[in-house]
Image (cartoon, rainbow, N blue to C red; front, side, top):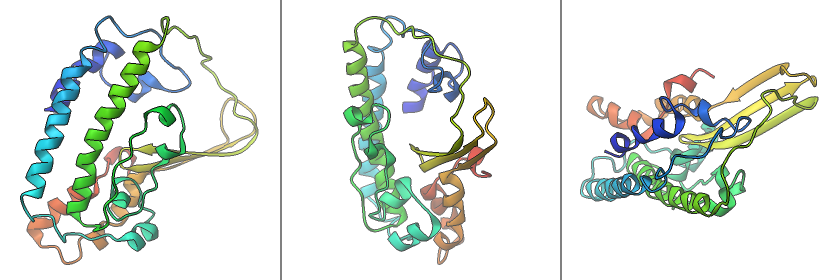
Length: 232
């Protein structure tokens, strides 16, 4: 429901299909949002908040995921797990709390759980919906209070200083990192990516121990991964 309402709204801002490339940090935003775009967010966010509440009630009404595919704190550390999977085991490594970009003013943390099972992971994921709604509302308020229009010209080419550089951000499934080695030119000498999906999939064998065949789909869904970044 939330995606159905959100999908048509994104192209009105981006001028095409939703794609992260439209908002790359080095490019910034080419122009301000159309009139009424921020106001149109409200019904979409209301739908997402309603959906989160409904999902929470449904989840707590049953025991389908309780005790299933337990990955405790030690397992998370051993497999390099982060994001919702780690927060469901009491290990909060959320990089947004470190305050990059404008998160010092926007970040709303999710309450960690400790059970480490599929139920706890779904609890965290549902809570993420509510926290995301709060952060988007806060960002919209800041945007409305910002004087003038967005029309900043940024360089299309960047030169990374010579040396080794590493950075991390909080992606939907956990920590996404990038290691770049530069010789001072416009093209890096080496780039290595670390994605949360590969870590989540590496723990799948352990998570499936003791699960019945009809529970396999539930286990996989509770871990979460994106095929496109699983091979990094």
